[in-house]
Image: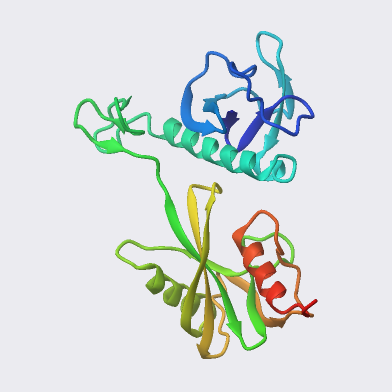
Length: 259
């Protein structure tokens, strides 16, 4: 699975991954074993500074198309897209840990673990995962959605934030929601989780019930927020590639007329 800098290298026009016994693209480049996909082994291949172009070919004439990982969603099946996200994260980790973060010496691959080790001071560096909570807050028959400054255009989603050191997931939920929109939540329920390679995140989804407070926005983070009913949702994800869309889709399905 050839990847580099958030791009997946496919055969031009392909909607599947090349899963042959020997990869056609990226032969001879650094590779990392990811596990089995069905009954076939899978490697992530570091394409390096191949090209910034959308299309190109290798030195031995094999053509490729560089597809951004986000754009590959829907073009690839869900299992392949998830595997591509894993490949991107492993390759990016390996490239950014070529030197020891403590003493600066070149690192080597560990003999047994997926880790890079400094031969001088012994520091082990494992692939980084950044846990983040993502929360659908409900108030009666309404949900809280916000337009964050990171979204282009007027696009809303659920609230989310990274877990800080020494903080539980529940503590993070209470802190993030109060910081971003000024309210307090009560009962919290686990929804599910999703690996999210943009970048290196594990999104842990919850629903939470509004308990008290009025919306007071953290303006450096939130442009607009509000309570919305099922028949008056703003532009937001419903289903699709993210756990935010899955939670909103489930909430809508729970309110659909029976039959």
